[in-house]
Length: 417
Image (cartoon, rainbow, N blue to C red; front, side):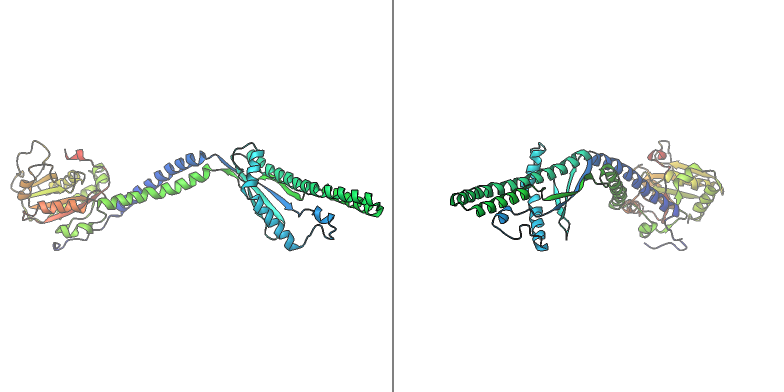
């Protein structure tokens, strides 16, 4: 479809772009608010997230059996030995057997949720636990330390239960042999083992269980995440729906379906609210001045791409423009009182608001009588397919088909009637 000579290029009005951006911004704001509320509720239902930690130094215990056997080094402190000992203990403390023992000490039917991490390069380990409250988190960590201390004492008792019977046997044999020196040696060994066994447990609590300062409620995080998701999802949904519906975003999308474009685009909200303003009068004169038929009598037929295109407002503007140069008459095909397509006199202008395709059975006759055919297409509402339908419905007319772009609010289907 070629353009008519002298036709002006049509671009999306800045205000129309602002309206669309405003709609996206409103959608983003509403989505962010709804997302924040929903995220806060969901994360708030998770309760609190309190984490307690404690620092504990592990020291390899005295090997009582080695003492009884006369070993010179009963508590090896070589770095490799300490590292191996700590790694082995951390593996045990992270196992289900230990966590189940802690859970039993707390009266729970399931293993306690305890994390034990080794400080690389040292014999210090970190006990940590998370719970619904600060008190529960601290209680869990303290229970883990207590259970581990008790277990270390049990290990020492088990060694004594192995060594003491052997010492008794050795002492009885020395007494029977009358070896007083051996008896004194065994007695000294017994005292040394007793002293070593009575030493404190092989752990040192460097930091008592305390709540981590980063612990807190989950709902603020839920609100932030919900706001981000909602504020992003709603505009994307708006864009997707607009693209899927094929709604017009610029005049170039229908440029090949019409013979020319009228300028400027009509702001429906402003034209309806300020119909008697100086700016509205200027727009009316500009639109009417672009009607291509020479006159003197004109029949201007406006067809909307959809019932929401705004033909009634555009026809009112053309009525104002035509009224400044001669008699004018406006009829709307949706009105039952429509009797015929006759202007006021031979020099007057007849403006026919035909509505959308299918709104009236008289639209075919109006197209045949038209000297000027205008399709009204509304940005962000109408589609290319709807404009193509108007193009197809007017092919029998000798009059060229022009387009007026409309945008904004202030119009409803009832305006036709």
